[in-house]
Amino acid sequence: MTTFPKTLPRTLSVTQVLVCGAAIVTLSMGIRHGFGLWLQPVTQARDWTRETFSFSIAIQNISWGFAGIFAGMVADKFGAFRVIVVGAVIYALGLIGMAHAATPLLFTASAGLLIGVAQAGTTYAVIYGVIGRNIPADRRSWAMGIAAAAGSFGQFLMVPTEGFLIGSVGWQQALVILGFAALVMVPLAWGLREPGFAGGNVIKREQTILQALREAFKYPSFQMLVAGYFVCGFQLVFIGVHMPSYLKDKGLQPQVASYALALIGLFNVFGTYAAGVLGHKLRKNYILSFIYLARALAIGVFVLVPTTPLSVYVFAAVMGLLWLSTVPVTNAAVAQIFGVAHLSMLSGLVFLSHQVGSFLGAWLGGLLYDRTGSYDLVWYIAIALGVFAALINLPVKEHAIARGGGVLAARTLPA
Image (cartoon, rainbow, N blue to C red):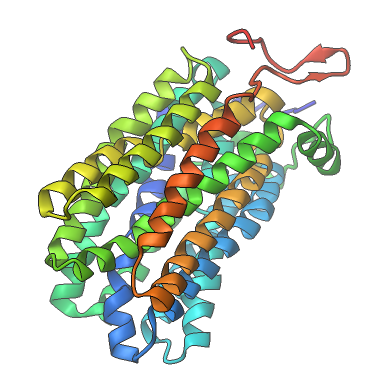
């Protein structure tokens, strides 16, 4: 059973959690959403292939996924504050290293390994753990939607800023500036110092980590959520990393890609918030199935119609509504099924699947382009995976798992 010192308040205020958590996600996700803008400047300056850059970003995503599990474990046991501070410092080091890496190995170590580990400690799994522990269950999906929307606002805010910096001071100096910007997350983390972890306290729980892991992996609905999240990662990272180069190959100006990525971020503010709100009213598995099917349809139409600035902006707006809307719904479903005691760790496990998909989306995009001279095959794979994810989420049961003759939380909508 979770216990807190009697002399300290049990939870942080909703406002404090959302303001600080959203600001951290805005910075962390906002910076990483613009990495596609560096693909051509870096490869041209270093005389590397697109596959070299893509592989580094793929390593970043898989590192983020694996590190996210352990970051979640530490945050669940000792609190999120320490994890976020360490993550912010590593983020700064990774960005500065990325600017000065002269070989593919060093670039992969900084842009891939370091930044991936940093993102694990400064994004959703850790922040959602704080939300789960401090915000009541009846407002949790809404709060997670707010945090996800903040990541989208970060994309809207930071991607044009990054494009401006690259054009104004060059791609290397732009990365150094972003490195110092990442350190702003350190003071923001102070606002997420949870009272239950004050003075180095460790929270005791009714389940051990191994018990929680065994329970989750034996539960079919958890496996289905994991499979669906793989598709989410593949689609998002392929589009985020390779769409700027795809549009340039089609003869469009570089600013079209910057505006498109910014539009994705802007419209996803509304999409993720709406998904979080709907998560209280509708079955979460139905919401997820709709999102994945709608993505498949949007991508299919985009690759069939002529590529013009207008078609790009319409596609960006539609994809924006669907971009991170899976995040609050998926994590709220995990919290509803298993409770919040190990939420950061379980969210990290689900997110690992997302990052395996991200690895393949980033790497295959570059690999298949270099082999075929086109991104068409990867677009078709993204469509097929969207249909698969829509189908695999339909049987998910989101009610609380029975444990020890009881349940963790009240059932919401009938299965």
